[in-house]
Amino acid sequence: MNTKTTRLKNVCVYCGSGQGRNPAYGEAAELLGKALAAADLRLVYGGGNIGLMGLVARAARDAGGAVTGIIPAFLSKREIKITGIDELVVVDNMHERKMMMYERSDAFVALPGGIGTLEELVEQLTWAQLGHHRKPIVLANVDGFWSPFLSLLEHMREETFIRHGLDVRVIVVDQVQDIIPRLEQAVRDNLGDEEDGENGVAAKF
Image (cartoon, rainbow, N blue to C red; front, side, top):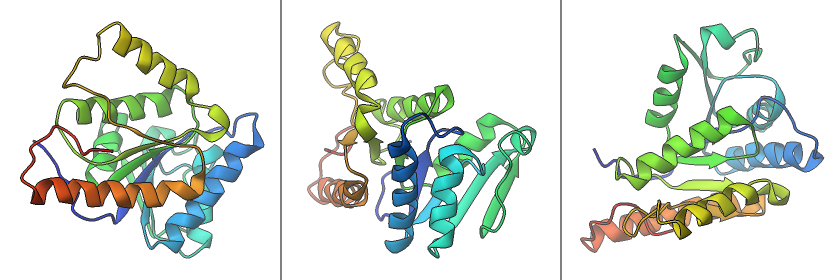
């Protein structure tokens, strides 16, 4: 399957259930939530009400944006499932949560976070690398948070584990205000590739 994004309507945000030490992470989450609402884009996220997850969701909700939260039943207490959003889906397990988040989204953004955020991000990068989808993926490198990960990707390229034709296509942005314009541009580029008859594995970011 090679899912192509034809229009940007729903943006999945992966982020931490904690806020981290740097206040810039929380500020970025709130700014992104407000920006999604202002652009009339639905936020799809993990359904929690704590950490950066809660900040981005409440910011989008309070700004009048549409929010879909997807949370496994066993995390409803640990991550304190959010209330007051227009859609909260409780699923049985993490695999179902991740698949539903993928299916409900046209693009992905990774804010700072921990192992869970990294795992979700890497899964989407892998699927895009293998041609499973062409949905744009943004890495919000707030205060250089993701720089060590980007260095690891470069190391993998140098060691030829990321080979020619299997490039990792990720949009790296340093400023939150650049996220939505870059996503919109990626979708336009993706559509342009289709119209030009190109059959590449991923959109050209």
